[in-house]
Length: 180
Image (cartoon, rainbow, N blue to C red; front, side, top):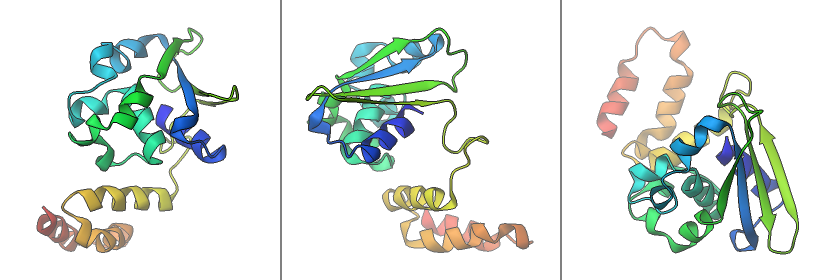
């Protein structure tokens, strides 16, 4: 939800990473240890796998790149100096009124003194906020481009879209098998 909120703010206010002075993530009590500590790991992940569980890195990567796909969590990308510099600007604040993991807020404070904030109670893609088909397809294409399925991505989307009217999944499994 921090990533969704950050990307939303970035688009709404046309933010640039170099304009950002600080990013404050408001979290429920139980999220600090999992997503923000230990600081030496979360603010400078050793590899892509470690980056996935680092809110500072993921928020910074999303804001720098304007998206968050598999390309942003490679072992090479986690050494990007612009992303790491922005990740160090991500702070956290515990709000005890947040009772579950479906509450989050992001405030982005700019160097010129302005700030913008977004609170999210549900993640995009949750039952409460279903992801639009276009978003799911674009995320699939972006991740497929990085992976082995890129040459079959459009056909995989077509086949998956028709699955409920099909008794045969052989074409889909064949496409996936050829893509790995």
